[in-house]
Amino acid sequence: MNRNLVVLSALGAGLMTVAGAAQTAAPQAPAAPAPTAAAAPAPQAIPAKIALVAFEQAVFATNEGQKAVQEVQKKFEPRKGQIDTLAGEVDSLKKQLQSAPATLSDADRAARLKAIDTKEKQLNRDAEDAQTAYNTELQEAYAKVAQKVSVTLKTYVAQNGYTLLLDVSNQQSAVMWAVQNTDVTQAVVEAYNTSSGVAAPPPSAPSAARPRPAGATAPKPAAPKPAAPR
Figure 1 (cartoon, rainbow, N blue to C red):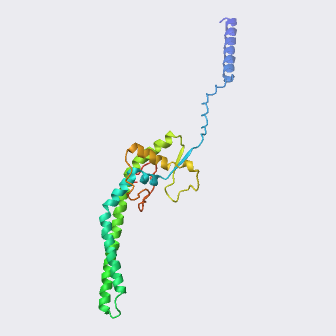
Figure 2 (figure 1 turned 135 degrees about the vertical axis):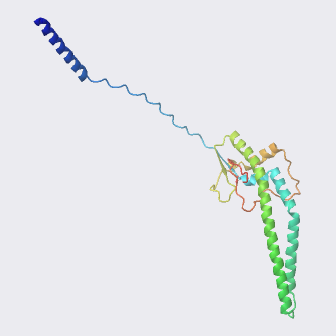
Figure 3 (figure 1 turned 45 degrees about the vertical axis):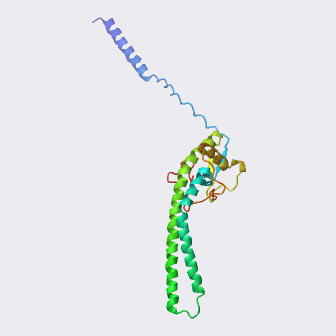
């Protein structure tokens, strides 16, 4: 083999080895940073406008609420009359016993006391049953009207730019004081009377603006009571 060719081949192999090593040692270019997401804008505070409502009282103050209460009261008038009559009998028996002569025998006195006790127990049972039934029907009447008044209430506060609504029907409400013009109860009553088209009860009708059924709770305007504010 030609000596010059061998020398050139060896030189070429050496250059390729050096070039390969140089490529291996060459530093890598840093990767481009990943694009960061734009920061979400901070929520903007808006001026607060607070409304107060005595929701339960508003429901009963509407024309429809008053008529509903009067219908329940009228339905229970016969039972009320029976209870009043029985109460009168118990009272009369007690007075007769108190005015009885001292010569009244023990047996007669015991018989009268037993009659009073029997009638008094019956009176208490009848009164309790009537009160429970009355409260149940009054609550049902309230719930039906409350669902519709709640719609009017939410529409009213939305249209008037209120940002928060508080129900102060409950006596345990956390609101201790408020400016009078924040109370929208009467405005909502008037708005509902207009939309419902129900006429006001006659002036001679018993006042039923603010009855409170025993055990009743105030409906959440935000969630009307289907079996109920409140």
